[in-house]
Length: 387
Image 1 (cartoon, one colour):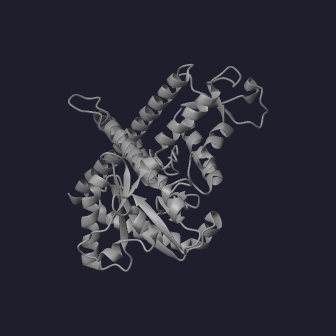
Image 2 (cartoon, one colour):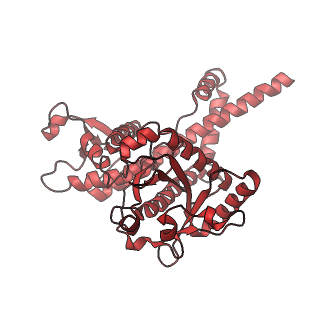
Image 3 (cartoon, one colour):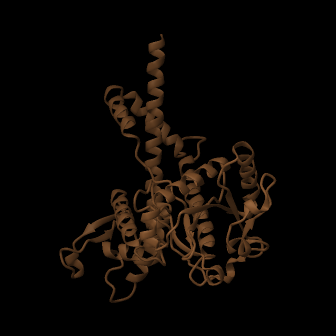
């Protein structure tokens, strides 16, 4: 879960110097910022558009991943008939969130192979996606002993999967065929398609011009189950996770506080405008909400990051636990009165989401304005040097 809103330290240091020594560049920074926020004539809020697009893109990815892993749930047809099952989403996130990991891993109690799955809802850079898939599989193999300890599944081999919406499959096919022609890789990348025309179906693509059909299918009953019309997702009881470890912070916040607020409704559940650290942590530390094999440590990480961000954004504040009849060891928080209004679940959640997006947009505009100002300043200095 990452959402950068601060400039690089070196850039920030340069801007601090510029601001002190050359005040006119402070005015230039404000001019750039106002333009990007659509606050000047004939401009539009491009930062807001990018933030909203980024959130939507991440949510589309999560929807694709959700449907894909549903096919391997504990009551799914695939698991019932073949034994292949979901081992977890975003494995190794708990070691390092920046680690190049797959979106999900699927395994079998009686096989020494696991399947790494990378979901791409947009596939803007197909060849880059293939490189990511291979890198992620290598990292999984490097951590085989660790993952065996966490999942109970021993493996020596990996089958690599790219999963895309059906309408994007042609781009994936072109990329895989081009890679096969140019590089002749040792390990195949299998292609799964999630088709959503009449009903959701997960299918294995088998026809490539650059490899035989036997090279494009899994060496297990997965090939049989996913071939032809594929597996109808509607026939698989949905896992319906709330989010994944690396989901957009806005999504993590929205789902978490929907639950926290819901649980605070009612006469005996305390003030709806208060909540504890434990309430947030308990929601995340649940595999039904976050399908990961190590939810406790993931919950530790996401809870800390989420609450720190909301405090920094001025949307929540620390509260006195004695107000709720709690001991001093309890971490109690309340919603900031100026930023998050209302006494009902719907109003509080709506203003929390609005406040989060507004602060995110403001900070991204500030960061980008600083970066552009520094770039212009350095270019200006370079022109003097040339002269």
